[in-house]
Length: 448
Ligand code: SF4
Ligand code: SF4
Image (cartoon, rainbow, N blue to C red; front, side, top):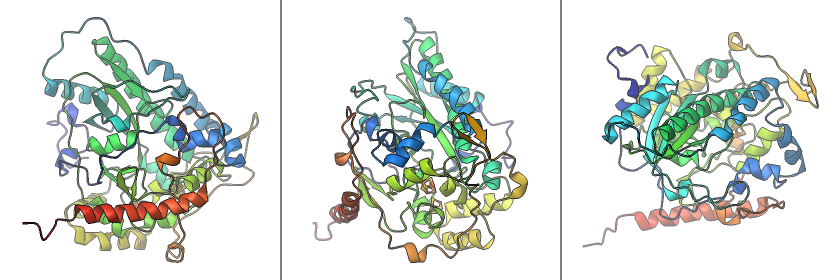
């Protein structure tokens, strides 16, 4: 970040020059008018709790957060913030500026003051609210704006890690805790000014954060599928959100050529230990044009991983997961500006060995909590580096898609087993649906 002067940089812009990335009116991902709201019960970690993903995942999810002692310590503070997420606004309005531009700059600067890495704002689409809460009750809150806070998961630790070893869970929970500390504080502050506000974190939230990050201009949808990739952090981040009625100015989505980059690059698909990321094309899923991962495979691996506490290997291996060095920054701007650079840059990333672990950065202890005891993990630790020879032979492996019409109902308390066979059929339908939609969107050459 030393490339430009911080002295002249206003606080609301933060450290990363996001204002230099091209803004567009619509996201680079097609979102149709047919996006359905989903209940929290449909989330795959929740489904694991209900036994939908099988007995083993159902057992392992109960110790998922506390499986590693550092993860457990971070998780405990994170979850204790949940009661502070909501509250009533002060009865009177505080004497604050009535200009939404000034208020926007103020809220963004506050988030940076509290150590957010990036902040973006969008209007809340209805579909981004969950339909039902964990008790199965309809969610009726409708704030106008979402303030999306992005937290870097930390480059150096990813350097030392395989992505699915014993630090992987704590990498996520460190960012979740930082994010929720910021959004919970800011939501409380806004309520004290007399406006509605609610914090939404990984521990408890009423909104889907992925579309909000996209709409708030903080990244593009990547091949990893359910992950928005940011030009400066790559996929290495977590988000937390404040929804509010405080008058704000939304940001526009961005386009930094990622759709072409991910079309060419398959590194995350190749390196995913569960082989859950598609090598193939996008599909139409719940009204979105998306590279859809096999979420059943991904969550099963993360929850039942015996040689690590979670998994974020797709984030670790992505060529956009870089930091600091001048030639990395140069490569990033080349990729943003010129699509023709994508192929050589992707080739170079492997050729230079990016993705292998850096032992100097390995600072944590391999520890597992079994029952009440913390022990050296009996199964050891995942030590994977690059799998250059993997990939091509696996490209035909089918991935299942689980569309919202087959999700459990919002108030379903019984086990609803994941139907993988149907998921494979639904994957073919989703691919066909996108092709059909694209046909209808083609300009009619015969039109007068
Ligand atoms: S989190 Fe792990 S298992 Fe899931 S898609 Fe990424 S690499 Fe694959
Ligand atoms: S690894 Fe490659 S394909 Fe996967 S998200 Fe990163 S750039 Fe896209």
